[in-house]
Image 1 (tube, helix red, strand yellow):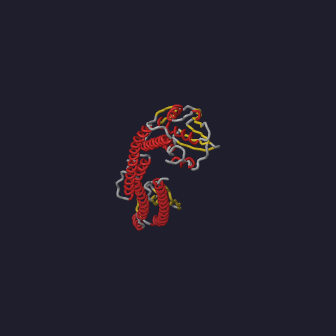
Image 2: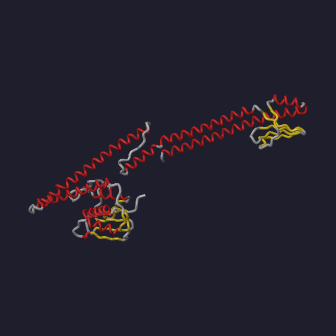
Image 3: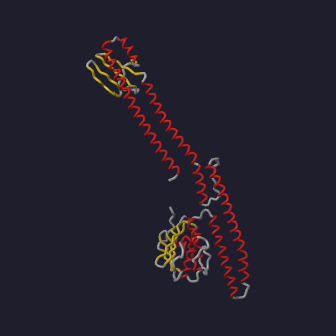
Length: 403
């Protein structure tokens, strides 16, 4: 759950509680106010009922003023709170259309409608309390908005970090505030700049060293052709080939690191297999059994995917204890099987550069093949899987895009 979701959730809980408290306070105040009104109007009504039997109209007006009552024009009840019948009439207390409390007294044929002027003060106090509750909710909403605005730059910083992690090393956060979040943004920008400089320096060094090495290697191999056949000549030739292979693989890794996207084109699985075989150096093709169950069409960079499949075939041939190895193509999956002993460590360990089986240090290769395969597969959004079952290794490129 994101921090914004948590804050919104807490705000909604707080707002709900405030609304509930406000509603409960308003209900309690209304009940108390109505109880006061009923009690006063009932007492006043009984007094007036007696006065109407013995007093003149002018005297009644004076009596009304002593009770803080004013006579008003007849109104229609909206909500009757109490009705009390008497022998010569009735006493009625109700709310009118404006929600004001009215005392209605009927004595024989006379109807009098009265309103207490002092009750407005009590009602005003209730409204003040309700207004304070509403103001509290408004302040709570304002605080919520301010917190979201203060934290909103985190989205920008997170987006910049995510783009940086995906290889956009120039990605920076534009936040320039002077608070703690601004400090986080500046720290991230400084860190990103340092890492970018290191990556660019490493790539430049690797690229320059790789290109510079290929020239003396080529010269050395050319010069060896003039040397007479001997065991030393074969040793030097083998060493130069290994250096050339290492240089090519290091340059390939550097290109994979610096390439943001692959050139995606549609091609069939059979085309991919044929392209991988064209890159593979093998003295006996019977060592590989090809089984294409489903010649499906996939999208990707043919050069790099064929290089990945070629590396898997190379590894399978190198470590196989019996032949043939099997290349199988089924729906959305290209698998390479070979018989051999189980891996000595977790599969993820062999995806890092310069890692091989401990017991195979004397064999050819530098432990870069699977690392290159992993990078190529990841660049395409595909999955590289491995399993060992019944004495057989199975390396698979699953060409369905990861969710």
